[in-house]
Image (tube, rainbow, N blue to C red; front, side, top):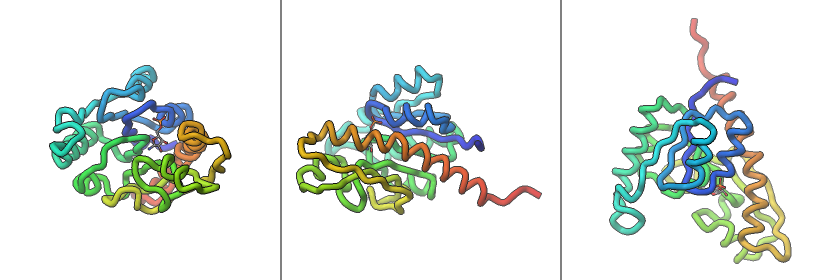
Length: 198
Ligand code: GRF
């Protein structure tokens, strides 16, 4: 497939990153906002890594410099000639400059059927609401969190004895299949739409 330079943004265990690498998404860079296992997965796979640590921008409280952090991430992605950004369990909400730097070039996977259950506690919220069906959503990330255009969704049944962990694991099983597929389709659609040089 076309070698578009994809950056994967991570904060956690990186099982979705792992699935992308196994599915030959052209991952050129893995960028994290904190030390995490996903960075170790990237290093083991021989992929370039960058850590833009939130602690260097005021950490996790009121003092967090979201704009400064965002500008730094956008600059690092630019320095690596990144063309497409895929958030995969990334724990920081960006300020507007990120979306100006990568218009229609930031994808996200979310563990619920958006617009239901946006936010960081989507699995807990779905369980607490007592829904029979939840799932995952791959969407374009826009300045309004978890509200960008939906590219694909897949349903997951909630089982009687589900905990947050068991339900999230079944959702992630879907995300590991759906997200790499949608990323590759998105790259192909963008490439096909690009004018051919004369
Ligand atoms: C996924 O469920 C993703 O949708 C959510 O965080 C999880 C990341 O899982 N935002 P992992 O770190 O790739 O295992």
